[in-house]
Amino acid sequence: MKCKICQADSSKFGCARVLGRYSVDYFQCSECGLVQTEEPYWLEEAYLEAIAPSDVGLVFRNQLSSAIASNVIFNLFDHEKNLLDYGGGCGLFVRLMRDLGYDFYWHDKYCKNLFAKGFEADSISHPSYELVTAFEVFEHLVNPIDEIGSILKSSQNILFSTTLLPPESPKLEDWSYYALHEGQHIVIYTMQALRVIANRFQLRLYSNGFTVHLLTVKEIDPAVFDQLVSVQRLDQRKASLLESDYYKIVDALLQRQEQISSSNRGCNGSQPILLVAFPDWAQPEAILLPILENTFKAVLQRAGNARIALSFYAGRLSPVVLEEAELLLSSAVMQSLMQDEIEVPDGLEVSLISELDSRWSERSWCRLSLDCEDEAAIAIASQPGIPVISWEALAAGEHCW
Image (cartoon, rainbow, N blue to C red; front, side, top):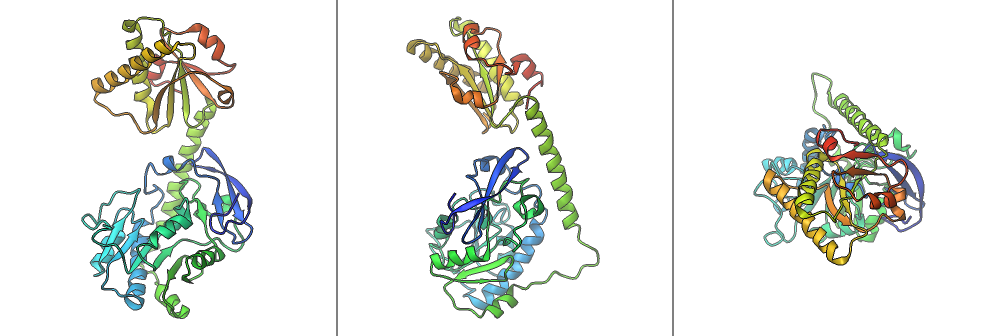
């Protein structure tokens, strides 16, 4: 695998369970030391909640980041100009900075703007910015070089935070910043990786060597930068509960993920959950339509946040009958939705399939039995050990995920 930063060869660093269910390989670059995951196919699920449930430090981090940003911008940049927060989350940082007198704007493609409404970034009104902040964003980037290059079109100055990989390169299970339970941290940087980025874009790099970094065209005294970002915590009368709260929530998430994983293993499940039904398409519409409607409703009621592929087998149909089956299935789906006035969850896919090829023997699936089935097709397609559940049982809450 090639490094996403310097394109050197990366070797396998380790393997870990991400989101409690995906076995994910991690790789480390032989040149710059960057750690990255394999292609992150699980991100859609990871961002079902843009702000991870375990991010109990969000408010404290934004307070600390606003103090650091204020120091850096006021002393090193033109603090009267427009500024942008990239990956701005719920908008709390932008609101804090505007409260401090800085003309900040918000941008985030995953999260809803709650606290800085009316101050969304507008490329027409503000085509460029004095400086862009990106706190706890770089570790989320699928294609770091491309996205950093995109940010630099708005400003040649980026103040950002991301925790660097410790020198000892801790194992995946020994360092919380890998955030395996969240699945959103897919790139972990080293100082050398940041230097490669700076050289790539012909910028200067300043860093406190740990979490806070600056890419800029300006020449700055490193000692001054270190002093400006050395914001200390306020004196507290009581010990913070931040760390204990974090581990309490992570433990709860891991337990929940383990329960889901165990349930999936009990049904030979995998992601997405594959359900296959074998209707007898030779039956008249008056018989098939209510069967298809009931099947779809049963799956819809129990889908929740699961990713489900509901397939109806149509492998032996002629082109004419296949077209009729497609129309009948579409009609059943539409009538079910109109009757119940609900929308199809993002994780549910409904389709006709023409065959169960060799790939299906490598994937776990479940047969959804119907009142009227094509027994010949079932005999041809079914495999030993495939679990079976009726649509009635599914509707009653008996499901295998």
